[in-house]
Image (cartoon, rainbow, N blue to C red; front, side, top):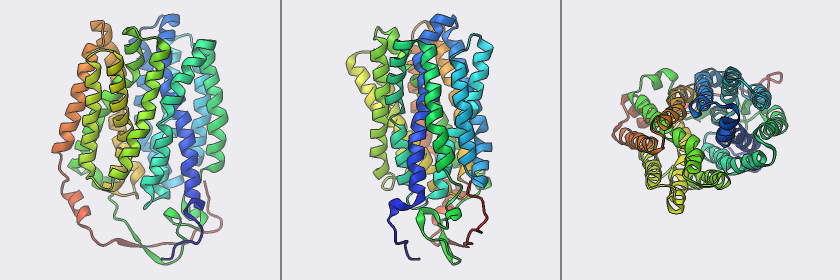
Length: 433
């Protein structure tokens, strides 16, 4: 099939990828990373324990995972435009409401709502959109989003700390809610579209014709759920998520408890974002050269190396080592998961398959901040937490190395001929949501 005459960067899918790169950076920065800066000031003003505070954050993660399948199914069928727009509107209102909270039940209610909004606007819906708009250039499009969003912590943890130091945590939170509204709502409403066919195009920008075209082999949701390798991979990613969430949320409190100034701790935590981007820069070209299973296991192992460094205390050397190694691994894991799911199962049912995995690993990850807080409250220090996250990272590595693709996936890998599917031109009146 002849290629289109216009340049690749004129394909509307690239505008969507760049838009999502911008909105994901802001959404992650405010809905996820800002929380860790406010743990100490909220603890001091409201009198709630660290366990009670992080329980709200974990509740949001739990609900976000529970919503993943519904969101993935919706976007597979109807597109992302209005779903992500509504999610941004509600998220902005809830962050503003967070700035006014005075009771623990209201705090939990707000964070439950933020969990719903996270399912509507964070990585899972964004990756499903990219799977619909790209096939051959999917890795590049995913890299654009994850490279940019990798700076979310680098930008928003120090920014949040500056706002907190200048205005207090309540005013800082209110200002973040306004920022979320004025940036993400219009972009989601105006730029996102349903699918390439609505613009007369195939994924990657080829012209839409009535001719048959080769389609990559894709597995159904049922095939994925019947795959033993899928569940072992889900377990490994879940354990890695458990470890990463525990240390990521508690990194600033760990540093502050170790005698590091809050501003320096925020800067160190934010620097993880820079290393996330570096990890994705390294991962992207290796993705096509190293088997996905080996790549993922290596990323899990690097995460463990970074966690091991903190066992030696919060010295400048160990902090730099942790930020560098853990940050690179933490960034690569996000891209690795999106890539390996598309590689193994195809794009036709990507939203549903990815959301099933997201539910289980998010469910595992929700226990991490609360579990780490409980260990801290019980022992009075972070040493048991650090040993726990290290063991989880090593266990995830071992599971990924030992897991082998089962018959369902081997049949897919043995396919040398593409499935041919007829392509119909979109009707003039079809929705472009």
